[in-house]
Length: 230
Ligand code: 13P
Image 1 (tube, helix red, strand yellow):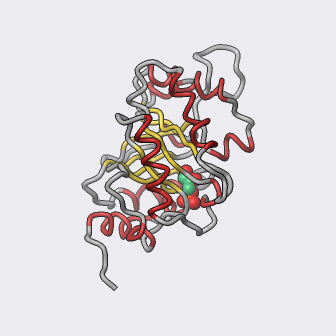
Image 2 (cartoon, protein in one colour):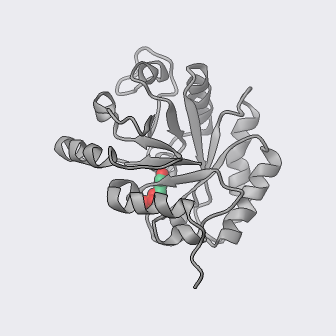
Image 3 (cartoon, protein in one colour):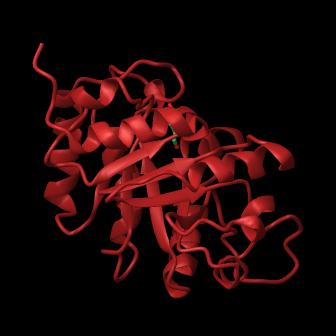
């Protein structure tokens, strides 16, 4: 399995160094990916994690003030990149065109894109997810792209869908993209992981929990355990 930590816009410099010291002690059989703020990419020193980012420029290089390109990220040892996180779609107006360019440029530099999709309201049907996945159809050799299903209403709210609800969406994704890894994100923690396991899932994307190393270790331990009875 792959477990991706999205720190979002958190941790000042001193906090990041303390945090990284705690993460050094994390043990797991799974692939662990840390996506810190870009300002800490050069400070990343963990042997037990791969390095990821939360965003990438849709442009290769040049006069794009404030952007960080896939080639720059590659030169810092980045192997994974989130693309189209709902917070980026909502607050930074990312368009389908941007997402396509981001995925293509990442693939060309050998960085694994993690395409985030998900409906905004619990009642919304699959159409949103299906539309968001259309983008993959226009990208060649896209099997490397990991699909992260994150219902927007579950992000940071403490509310999670039932595993049946998750599996319904994941089955539909798998029907159309049978070769892609699919992970789930949205209020996942060390307690609800028992209810969020599925043979259809290849991993998890963690926001809030990523900032709590002790609880993260508990989550990872429980990921490997059979579910509690009772
Ligand atoms: P939370 O785990 O805090 O709900 O965040 C999920 C997320 O957005 C990860 O990308």
